[in-house]
Length: 102
Image 1 (cartoon, rainbow, N blue to C red):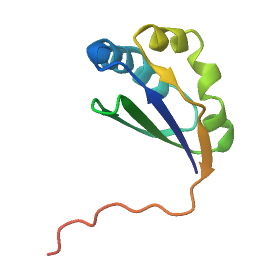
Image 2 (image 1 turned 90 degrees about the vertical axis):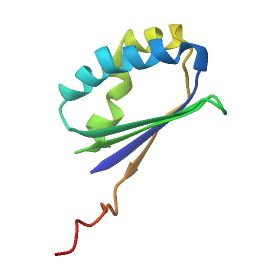
Image 3 (image 1 turned 60 degrees about the vertical axis):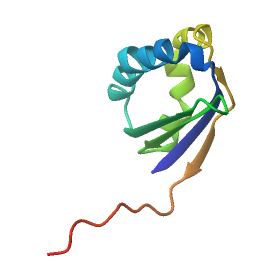
């Protein structure tokens, strides 16, 4: 598995439009991409920064995200998102919170 991280600068005044584009177009695209496992997105209005963390089954899928987005990149830029270069890492450890003890 592979982790792809992308950081951004964004305009908090356009957060509603940014999140609508994310929810209505980007997430459905991800759900149809081969190798997609998960996506987490966070924003900090105080610093005007954001981060996306993706998990992919293979490096080819992780590497192919930007190309798969096509003109959607310009749509994100039009709502004030400035995208930094992404980084891809091989996942070597992963854990989740344990369930309740019985």
